[in-house]
Amino acid sequence: MANILVVDDELGIRDLLFEILNDEGHAVEVAENAAQARMARQAARPDLVLLDIWMPDTDGVTLLKEWAGAGLLNMPVIMMSGHATIDTAVEATRIGAQAFLEKPITMQKLLKAVEQGLARKPPASASAKLGSSVSKEAPAALDTPQAVVLPPTHQSFDLEQPLRDARDAFERAYFEYHLTQESGSMTRVADKTGLERTHLYRKLKQLGVDLSKAKRLA
Image (cartoon, rainbow, N blue to C red; front, side, top):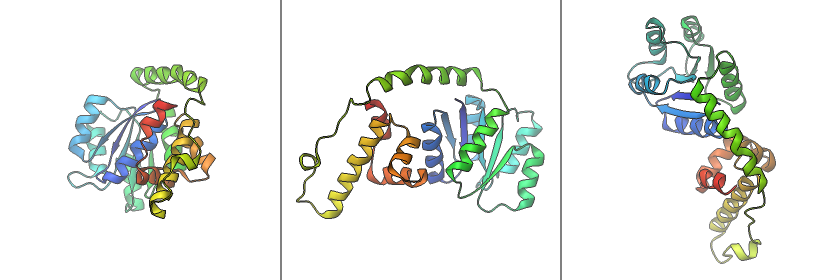
């Protein structure tokens, strides 16, 4: 697994990318502008950077050019934008960006771009250690897949409450159950419930499901 820096001025996109990449086992840092990105790059030494083009203080292409000029472009950089022109994408690639993702970004394209970007550079030692610790802990989670079993619905829900509240309570319990059964893996839960991953993430956030708790219980 790798250390990934996400740079985007939109909170919703930062949160979504953080959750997706964190669920894949990566250590994720976020920055909302170029100033924070410079500090995060210096402190965390990321294995890969997801960099938005349009930002309020310094745009992503300018920051990319700055890193390239200072000899700091020693990690793969994937540019992101919902409004960039082909010329902008070509310029970013010429400077040193390895890929360009157009918003809205699908999960398949995001994960594929990250996988390809990381494949071009060996992960740092810290990232390798992180991957080792994850792999060692995984079997322990699989040893007790039945550790948490939800009681029957007639014992768990208040049928006197409004329909919307009852439905939310059921959906919350439904997703918490599957998260527990699948050891917190969003990929397997998406497959099991038949939802696209982006929709699943938004649904869980809307219902207030604690993903970290589900992983601890698994």
